[in-house]
Image (tube, rainbow, N blue to C red; front, side, top):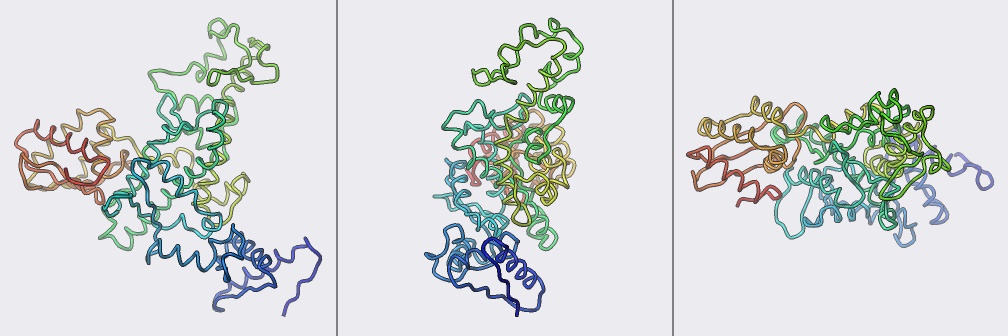
Length: 481
């Protein structure tokens, strides 16, 4: 018998929760029943246990349970189990023509308690309203691919000059867009965290059920985030002028470098750098935003040029994305952290979230987005592809046709084949087999196993025409023509 006594605020509930956690982790004792003399007191106990990572089920009438804890009631658990199916999977029912909005709405519906109970870590199955297709992996990969590809249409995301995805600068957001920033970015973080967990499920599946999972490619995002945004998400933003310039260079194409990213700007005169008349302001969305107090009347001179450059790049690459990164991080930590973590606490968050302390920003970027489907990527796929002898000639023509396409066309072809418009680093294991019908048939893709059924076309030109028609008509579906 243990008695804990004290006035309000002295830690009785925290002590009780700590004792219960120790008892629950001891093993061999069976389930524990925690009781209190009021519903509010039971809610406090449950909240404390969930924060400590102890899974609990709230018994009693849901109407008498705090709203923020109702996902932990027995009734809610049973309903959620029915939605996920006996295998414990998470099902998302989405509207294809409104994929981004319906996904954000669905993910925003999960309460904090549901998230803490690990609902986002479950194997994911995608269903589209009004479609009868079964998700054997292809629809899931397609969802992650299309979700990020559609983000720029939301008015909250844009692309860098090199094509990296970054949030719209906070100073350029309208009042309406700013009001949507938190729920939108948290949902985006949750989706990206779920993509990481789906890869974990896939790799475990390859180990335990190779006959089912061995041919499945990873779930990749259809767009690649700017590295400086990922550094902000990881609580590791660029700190020095040299780091800021390096991040800017990483997001500039070689054909159009940004003069602010090179060393010459610090060694040349104001006239040579085109900075005569420049003041301590930056222009965002048609408005002037001061970099320092009174920046509009403070002129840049040779002595203050380095200060101006550092403040300019910090405002653009760090401060302009800080709010979005914080909300995105919250959603990401919801999905991948081992317990209840304060995403705003830099030290705790970085050292308790595996993907933050184990991976650099470049490695996280590669894990999420893989590689673009370039000519070299297709060449690596060709080297490892399994081709049926009946269509060896047609496969040869296929590689030749793919080599002639531009990057965007190859990405659409790869999505048609695998469900993703980007591929894993190092190439993919593709299978090409025969299909009946000859010149009158179209290629057919099995996205769940990255397999292409290719008719025995009589010419390279006909293969190119039929492949183009199939990709155009069905690259966002998984059905025959």
